[in-house]
Image 1 (cartoon, rainbow, N blue to C red):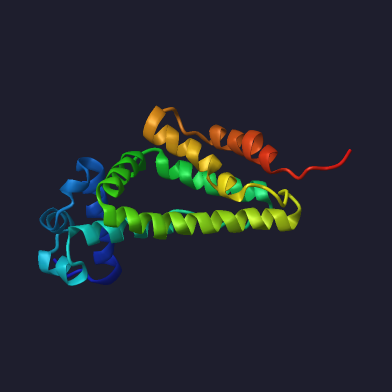
Image 2: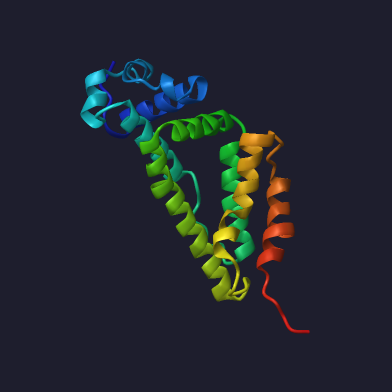
Length: 192
């Protein structure tokens, strides 16, 4: 078998971490298990990561940073739909168990939690703030909108369904969140 390097090896390692995490939880992501699942050696892993926590952290951050569009569709509604559809896609199907396991990993590792909050959630907050600011600049969103609440409002419903209620996450739900909740809450006030 040819020796894998670069992107091919990275992809195999990431897939192994994610499969172990989704199927068995964060404690199953050990250097031994990842090396076996990725068909590589522990020294290869240790050259890149000092321990299993760093490997898990880097894998989750890589997935989180590449899973979402950075939309500018030309409309606030279009941008919201793109972002919430990306969340919905991540939360449904085969990736749903992975997302639940990732949250367990984040909540049981203080260093991973701090990194996740700063890097992933911080990046998402910045992107949603920029999306809302574009809406304000276009005149589609009122200037005094509570940005800190609006940027989390739609996503919180999806997270609740994923982690708490188990209710379906559908495209119809995403469209309803945008058209019946987010657009009315952010719409500019007009004098009669």
